[in-house]
Length: 195
Image (cartoon, rainbow, N blue to C red; front, top):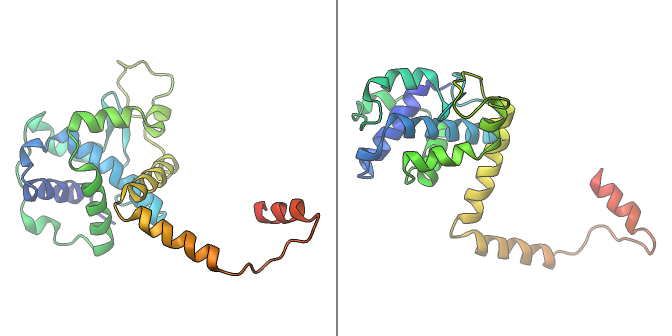
């Protein structure tokens, strides 16, 4: 399992590689970790890192990563040593790259606004005022469900999606049905599909 700080370092390096290192703040790292954890849970059914994500006042936060970069407040984070990300396995890299490709271009405040509209953070803060401090954990099952939603959006917004779906539908229509529904059997057939 990955350490949350290694994931944070990976995102910071990606920002510098993309020429947007100046935008990489602690707030942005926190939101990227939130999305990375959710997408990994959706894809693999297990956490990317063991640290919990908490529903703080200004959005989801992974406390160890926040504390590590706390001294920078809202300032640009320094580039980490490349060796610090060498041990990240290919599957984790793929998730981090997918999250970066989709969310990395957003400003920290936009990511924060997005997270405030999503059910995992709202659910973990249920009953608290907007000004209330909180260290309530965001449930892993809620993060997984969010990850499934985000993967669906990422897939649908991919430039190749319309052509791939066209091929899938064309192939499905060209395939001869394997089950023939007899007259009056539609209800039974539908129930068998829904069970």
